[in-house]
Image (tube, rainbow, N blue to C red; front, side, top):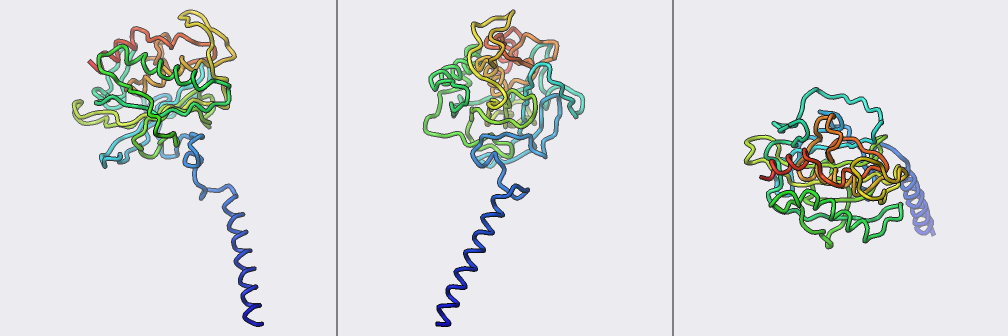
Length: 291
């Protein structure tokens, strides 16, 4: 009888302990797993990131899947008119990044050495169909591919899945998806990992992740391409923004703020469609990088 009572008491204690543990784990706090690793849908600027130019953050160094030391940069692209006060040191480029009036590189020579496939999650809350997101993504990547002899971006990898933007270290997947970007006023974020220092001949890109802010914008097709006027100003044009983000994925940085007509100009707005087609500075830059 005594043994039975002890056994029952033990079960009660274990049950209470389990309930307490579940309650504690459910509470918000510093020890919780970051949302980025819980499903990949939320993107934050990590505490260790350092803003080195307006909207460009250094993520530090890490090792890639091959064990090589690489460096990460996060491009944060704001809505036109949003007041952002950066905390950065003045200067252009990253490590010897070539700049002109209307193009800039992440770093001279930092480009893809092999054609890169990508992983796409078409999930969105704006009613865009799978076929639309798939075709527009491919067209936006081709905007850069079509300007150079080297095929920068390959085909969509259907055997892999998106698991989140990599702000700590690359995972050897180029991921494109719609998510929640917590930084206010941000349309999209692209993270690029690579080797950006040393002789230009050894520099290269190893990964990019592009995230489009879903909760704060209505994504879709804003209308016909126009270099001079806006389309539907209630819609953030996916093609327009994707071309810009994939420019970062190809190795391009933001040009001078006077280059308002370039696809890589760092601001955009609803209804804008002119970034769908590259401007002279964009074309000149990608040809020089991959020439």
